[in-house]
Image (cartoon, rainbow, N blue to C red; front, side):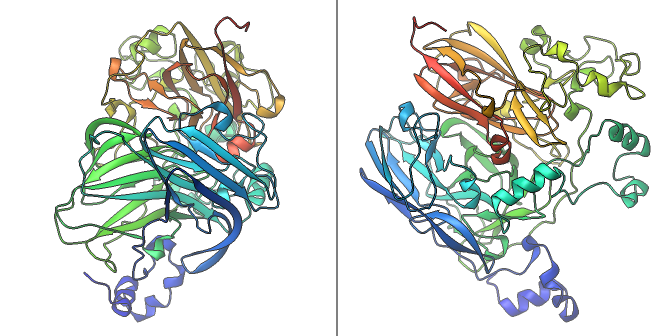
Length: 598
């Protein structure tokens, strides 16, 4: 259907009287424009110039301050070819230092673009030339690693075409950059969370929710209150201040990806947001995942997937009908959505689904998943390798646990949540509010609120590498890293150590193979990114384990990967929630030559 704007507004608002209230509707539910079908501006070749500068951007008709590159937000699509030598001259026209990190690219560490780790940064009015061989293909992105510039629009997509035939067959492609934008300055957002970490949470439990049976019971509320935990604290910053964007456009802008019915359309989806984990679906259209974090995977058909900050997924869709489809990227706390349209012609739209009920955190999210909620005790998601390390109890392996006998009843839980004996390497620090008593492997789960949506949702266990892994050796050692935080004081760290503590880097020896267990001691999801390397998720896929550069560690859960330290140098390792990283959840990984003393 081609939109007649006047008729659309009347129909969408349900009549003249209600139409007057349209301005009060959430952005994703408001009448849309005629549609923006312009692709992202693209730069390519062997010598590319990128100029960082302040600018304004218009979102849903409103002007906002921004930082862009070459005058655009998102920054231009950088299109490279596997096998070429890339030369990218970055000019900093800001009045402050800046940088560009090439997220997911394998390159020499001094070209990685992290100030204070791999280079000094780019001073105001100066330029820096990044030069490196392009040794891979796939969908990636780039962004600032200076201050909070990324929140203001300093991010852009990268597509690297393979030197040989692409194993993914498609007729058309669209790059979709998801992000979040606020009229508040990022420094003000951070200040508000330091003063009151729940400042942006407008979805707290209410008396009406209690009476209607939609929220926790009174008993549960009292117990969670005693532990100073809020089950609605799913996202630190959300739709109360954010507009969620597709390629720099708000929901009312109606960014549109065109197709011809019957075409195989490849969507290269990048989560370039500062703080937003999205749940992506296209009602009425199945998606086939063909690539994760730039690397090809065995095709898997699904209806929805969760994409963490800094992850990328390529999907292929084949719309057969001559009609529009709505592309929905719903924030994981369901406080808003990014919205776009897939259509045969510009100016079309499809129904936009309402936001689903917001999820509530559970005892499993608090790190109590190992207690088991199944007859006979244990946890169905407990993988054998994690059981062997004592991280969880397999289903049926133990009788149901008596919470009171463990001291978890009548206020005893608060003490058990600070039991450092289960994590002796964690620094006893005010930044550590809790230690997950019984974390479990959650990589077979789809993410908070997606367990019972009634259709198939992607998990990490669905993924398998298309090609055999380049290193299939067994790990020579294992390393536990706790993701620690104090949600009441908005303090974040690894093992209780913040980047500002100036601790020694986490050491690895060139070529060694290590199993890393990321243990989430908080009630929030953390997308963890390792620079300069890919790692293999331990999900039972053997020599076809999915290789990624970023992994979501679910609340109170464990994510495990095997890692080959094959890139010499110092590399950033951090949570990709921008304000978590800014608050301290970042360390340096140092890969040292063989024979060098640790």
